Image (cartoon, rainbow, N blue to C red; front, side, top):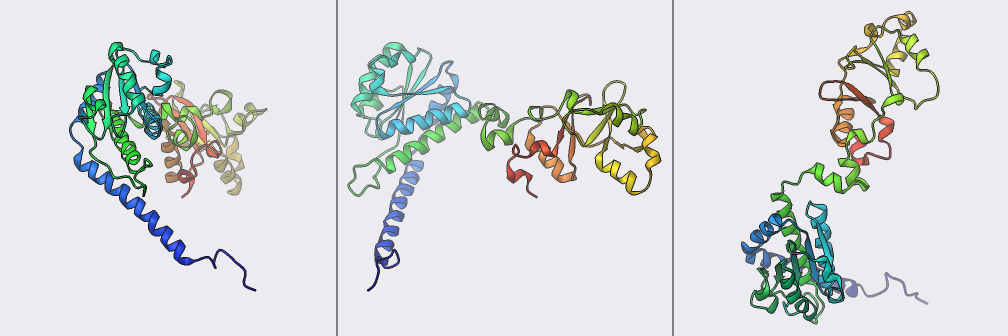
Length: 341
């Protein structure tokens, strides 16, 4: 007796399902292309309005548009513009107190006739905030009430019933991204600014600065060029975080050389143990590779990969020694794509 398995279920059903899914993507892709062609200069004026504002951006919308608004507020915040979402139903129960006269309210609504959004417009006017609408029609109630209206034009939903917000929310999200990134670009938002708002995760690790992970103080071995190798190892004996390098500095604290565990091993391999009692200045590697304070960890990783080194001194602008990055410090911190050859 044959058993019913996934394989025995009608392949036509799978093919039809795939065709339907692709059709949804086609409709949403075409909607994006249509809106791209329709988009007018109002979006640039909206970006300028946000940029000139000394307040926050308050993003509001109801239902799926409200969820898109939450994402837009988050994107604005992470790219240099202070922004907060505001639920219109909660707004009329006290949350309107979040809005100030110098704020810009971004209102999202496909139809421009969303009751909950329209209800808060008079209060927004009384509070003195500017209003930017993102909606299908500039002639809608929301579009006419706004200082600026980013009109999208008619959008065909991917839902077979024409009811569930699908293509319209895709378009709202994409236009919101375009607006947020335009503001960020005009604000001259940099990768280092981005790192400030993203200290966690792979983004934060990739953009963090070297001083956040470098060893300093008692955690690094530093010596003068006149000290012998043996004397330095004896002097720096005792409990401390292991470091594979001695950093040699001049009388002004500037880095002039490095002596690593590999250098020590080579002395033994070549039977030059007598040089353990010679000054470090004679056996060190002079003018070693180094990186300045303020550089990103990704730069340090790239240098260590390029020059195949395990220790990278950190210096200030004058060449003064301030710390050391050991390759072991990067394990679990630097993204794996940076560590891989």
